[in-house]
Length: 76
Image 1: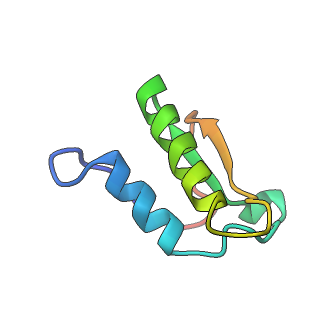
Image 2: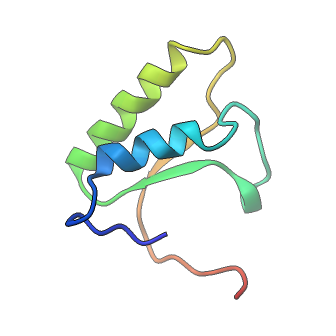
Image 3: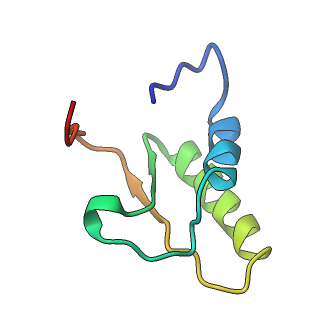
């Protein structure tokens, strides 16, 4: 997915992320759940959204929040 801030904002992406998958299931590194951020504001928003989701579930959230780096597509 490519993010265009002219179309939506980072907070909306986070909402879609949390609604779109099982974020409490631990997975292998190849399929792990992660939120990537590009700056401190995105990091703050991601951490706040994770805290909000954690309050809704009893299991620990298995989603990592990590800085964006070079991304390589696994397959076409």
